[in-house]
Length: 364
Image 1 (cartoon, rainbow, N blue to C red):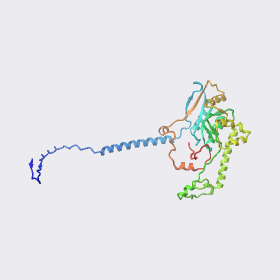
Image 2 (cartoon, helix red, strand yellow):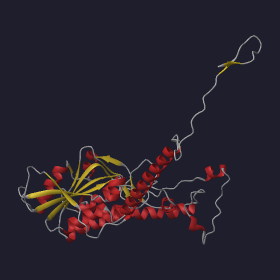
Image 3 (spheres, rainbow, N blue to C red):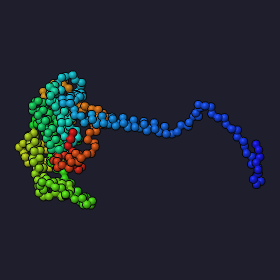
Image 4 (cartoon, rainbow, N blue to C red):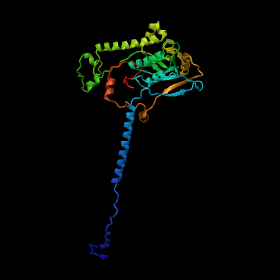
């Protein structure tokens, strides 16, 4: 080390650094790996996962929208009756769960299979439903009645937690046979009536300066519009539609409940839309017996003239497709689109017991 000129009172020592040897030819020093390569791999992985999920989602939606093959059989599930049986005669339980909407769905499949199976000698219609649209309720009543009359298979009804309005309408498919409508002790039933829901949003639209300005061929073409108050003329027309549906409901009851065939006033007193308990319904003649599913099955066996020691009791299981397995049974129709909005806004009569706004749409 060599001292350099002092500055002030200090002596500064400067170190001499030996020169470094040059890198040999062809030698490339290692480069420090940056973070860019790792991020690139991460984004590629995310992209692959996203594409895979998208593929599975679209595959599931496609599978869920593909209609079932005609005649595709539902699976059967054996239900023990007293003891395990091996008989060839069957009593089939046809289940009605939830709102009655749409056509050609799971309920129709059950009806068709029970009708076509020559080993099914009787049907127990298990209802747990608050009702649904007038047209769907009548559609399934029609096909259940055909099963009973054309296939000569008696139907016995077993009501669950609720069998009201359209649910009660379906129970009339048991026909005029005695002791064919069973309600559990805690069942709610009745609610005989029709409703066409309507809501007036004109006050809300006024706040946003929105006015209805439709161009229509006649003033009644827009009857029931949600953007204005209903006129008396429109209300009278809707009331006529409700009255006709109501009259059909009561006619179906009179045709299948001997109690009311000769006593029309008794039915008029009950047909107010009121919900009844099982005990109230039995006293009024709306149901025959208080009992559970087992009692309904016993009655079906009796009506069909079967040997209870040589009969199987079965129920049908929904066949799940790929879409149902990946997304759940209700994956179809989750997205709210224009078609559903139009369907919701259409005036539609319901046989339905509910305290909620009737924002339900037809469809399977």
